[in-house]
Length: 42
Image 1 (cartoon, helix red, strand yellow):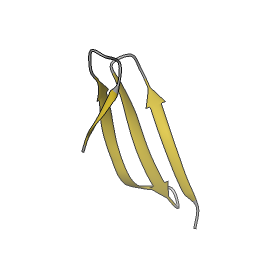
Image 2 (cartoon, rainbow, N blue to C red):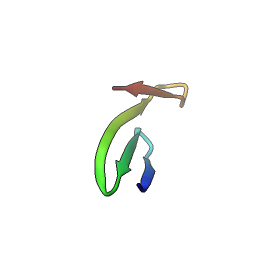
Image 3 (cartoon, rainbow, N blue to C red):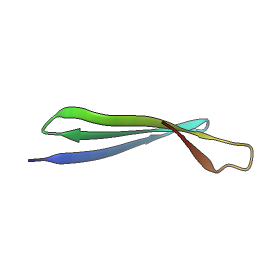
Image 4 (cartoon, rainbow, N blue to C red):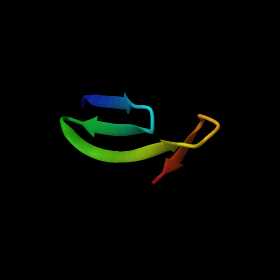
């Protein structure tokens, strides 16, 4: 079993994805607020 965890960071948000054996099993977006911290939006 191969697991990959990826994060794509931009100014407004960050995208997170988890893949197992090449299939995405979970993904979500973390939007940044005015104090430049991330909030998870599942």
